[in-house]
Length: 208
Image (tube, rainbow, N blue to C red; front, top):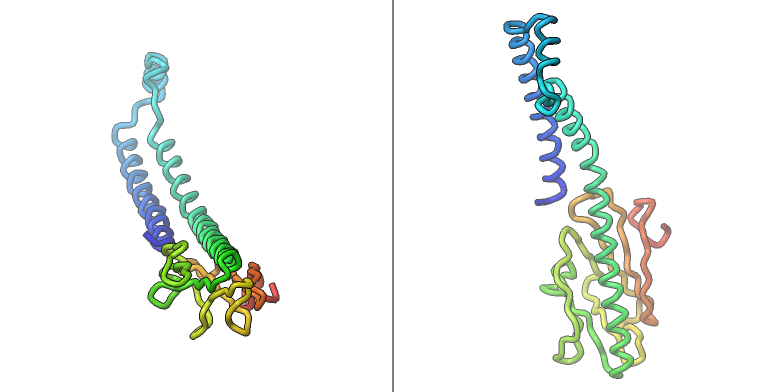
């Protein structure tokens, strides 16, 4: 179930609850008008009824359900945004860890270590490979889209530097909540990774 679907379910729940409350309220008002006991009878019933047998009245239940529905509708969108932001952050840290590990292994083995995206896309997961040996793998991160430079291999040589002459930048965004700030993993030519955040939502992680 996606975040948008959860939000839609919460809104529908609030709407249906409101309709049900109105219907119950109308029925209860009609019922009270037909069989409403006198003031003396109500007082007598309250005195005679044991305290432990007294429950909630229909209006109290209606108000409680109504408040719960309203709070659910209000809280759902912010909660979905928090979840989406945390997913992007976690996926970025996983990628940072993988890049750091690949660079460390390249230096230790004095060999080229490549981070290979599955089916040509990091969104599908990726594997750390040296020769024909897989050192580590990472599966799909739910709700995350990862874009990479086209036709450019992410690999480290025996000195820990990128095998390409330019920096390598991976961009991670939420595939479910578009307002989630984009995060970028920027790898310098020297092979050192850093995380940048597009807090001003202009599409560029480098200027904050």
